[in-house]
Image 1 (tube, one colour):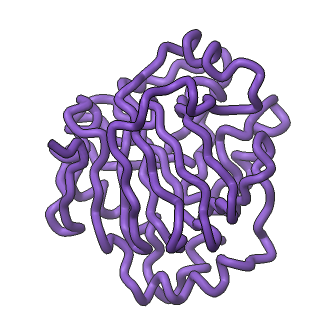
Image 2: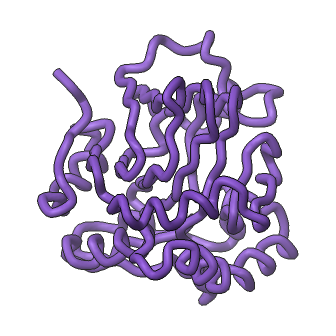
Length: 260
């Protein structure tokens, strides 16, 4: 039986998100979430955009906008928050005059989630959401987990009960680029031991085969629990481009918190 729940943009509801929070499903897959005309408008710009930079902790990956995971000290924290809203507006303009996948996601979540959805704030500073991420030909996104706590200020207590990841796919290779999902959530100490001396991520040889393998299409949305191990196979023929978002779950009646 598949551990991936498939639904439509109009049928997506808060129970689908909860099924991933509760680990009843490993992912929710929404084919065609982003409309073709919006993708066409942005793809030509995004594939060779002058604002593309390298992810600081893994320079083989490109991005437009800064990821929260790049924060390493107070100077980088200030720089992230100072650029948060300008970066959000920059991504929005790439899809103009169409609604960007990030804005469509924010509206959808605000409508379907009982407590609504809003940008994550850290010590009163808003976070950026909607990072464009590039995985070039033959680049492997190793098995890994994501956790907001790794980059939060030491004294900041986030009232998060769970973390979700939402990717909307802009460009997908014909060969490769599959999403791999494991039903394994290592404790932080265990995860660090698995990573060892690597810059990030886990050697696939240290893991059993993935429970699910999903090949999304351009325009699809996939929501998953990033605290479970996941990976992306290398792209065989072209650059894999996604719009990435994280959601913080603080209870059904509390707003979802959004960041990238």
